[in-house]
Image 1 (cartoon, one colour):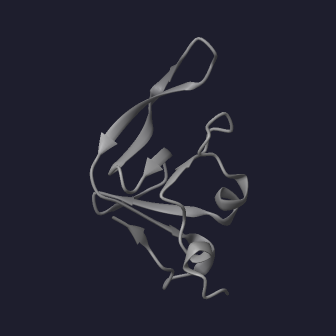
Image 2: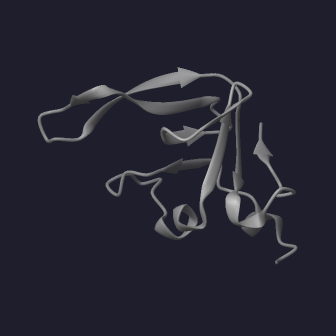
Length: 93
C-alpha cells in the first residue's frame, strides 16, 4: 500500500461511461465505493465530489443510441477504493 494520497483516494470526478472524458478503467477496476447523502450506493453512473452531484440511471429508459438515460442528483458525495478495506481514505468535499 502506498502512502501517496493521490493513489489511495479516488479522483474528484469519475464516470463508468467509456465515451466520457472522466472514464478511467484502471481506477474503476479497483472498485470505487460511493456514499451519497450518507447512504452507500451501487447504482452511480458518474460522480463529482467537488460539484456535489451524482448521476444515476433513470429506470430502464434508453436514448436513441441505446445508452441509459441518467438523472443528476445533488448532495454530499464521498468516495473510496474498496480494495483498501475498512479503513480506506475517503475523498470528500
